[in-house]
Image 1 (spheres, rainbow, N blue to C red):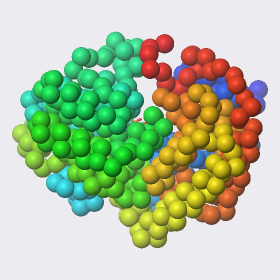
Image 2 (image 1 turned 135 degrees about the horizontal axis):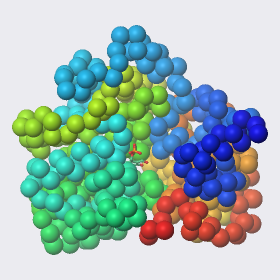
Image 3 (image 1 turned 90 degrees about the horizontal axis):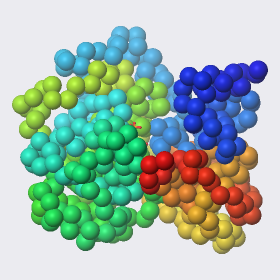
Image 4 (image 1 turned 90 degrees about the vertical axis):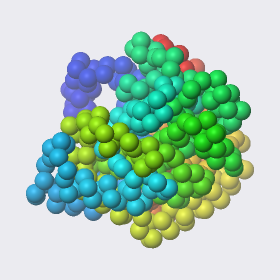
Amino acid sequence: MNDKERVLDLARRYVVPHRVEVWDAFGTQLVIGRREGYRLWDLDGKELIDLHLNGGTFNLGHRNPEVIEAMLGATAELDIGNHHFASLARAELGEDLARLTPGDLTYSVFCASGGEANDVAIKTARRATGRRTVVGLAAGFHGRTGLAGAAGENSAARYFLSESDDFVTVPFGDLDAIDAALRADDVAAVIVETVPATYGFPIVHDGYLQGIRALCDRYGALYIADEVQTGLGRSGSLWAVQRFGVEPDVLVCGKGLSGGMYPIAAAVIGARVADWLHQYGWGHVSTFGGAEIGCRVAQKVLEITTRPSVRSNVDRLTSRLGADLAALAQRQSYLTEIRQTGLIIGLRVDHPDGAVYLQQELYGLGVWAIASGFDQSILQFKPGLLMDEPTVDVVLERLELALARAKDVDRPVPKRHRLATDSPR
Ligand SMILES: Cc1ncc(COP(=O)(O)O)c(C=O)c1O
């Protein structure tokens, strides 16, 4: 048994057997060994350019040297810390987040994951309004923890008998449906990903998010912006809500905040809805949330992400990809739609499962990008913030070849092998 076979054997026996089965079926059985910048190497030696970035966790690349330096510097004097007490690292990160987020967003509740931070956002809304109902998008994904898992698309909540009538869903892009949901019930919050990731990054039309904000104001509900995937520079603004001129009551971030090196997430809460933080200091408790080493990492991530040179690289990549992908669509008719908000990009192809075929073909050519879980005709195409032009050249060349190959594939993807479903298995 070689190293990779041994890992897979152990994973099948002791971790999540179904995941191993699915990647086997897709022919993309990756066991990541070495990783550096935007490149990954499978244990069998295969090299891949990473265009998945685990939803933006690796926005700044794998093992970014500056992030590692910040983390190692922190380990010289800190540890996780004790979440019951104030700490310098948590306090300074809180100050950074308050300064860098819009409107009256002020207080950070630190968490170990995006799902947990969405749970905190929902708890905040329920406490602030005294209401229970949460409105989400039918194709919204907010994590798989308790409240977050019941919000938006809830197939996993139903699978685990954890769904609740207190969570209602509406279709993406439909302000009337949100209006009707808010009118029908006493709603605590509307929770939305600023650009829904697992739904394939649909274009957010002018006025949509502002319309949600206005409806929340009219009916006294909170606006929760889930920026776990769209935050931290990918949209061209630090937070995607800023592009759309919206100030949420709670902004949730995670993934990239960790620099891909130390787990950390946060719910940043507006002063007007933060009463519970003045009354009940232990209303949310998370031993690892705001671990001090993670706070130092997150501060470095924010510092790098807001540098003018990084922002201009994002702008440069955004315009280049916009032009080159449009030209590619002219040559490859299988690519039917390009959805772009900065470096948040979804590519629709001409088959309901086509993004899975494209994912497979790209993998064969040395690019790892993933199909959208709730719409397998769309490939999530997520270049990193620091990606250089030669890497983009290679990615585009391989994408063209993969499109040409994928268009001839027509192999049904069994329900058991779907990354996410709209109904329990
Ligand atoms: C938009 C969004 N929100 C929340 C989450 C949950 O984050 P975590 O996996 O850290 O709980 C994810 C994870 O993919 C996400 O994409």
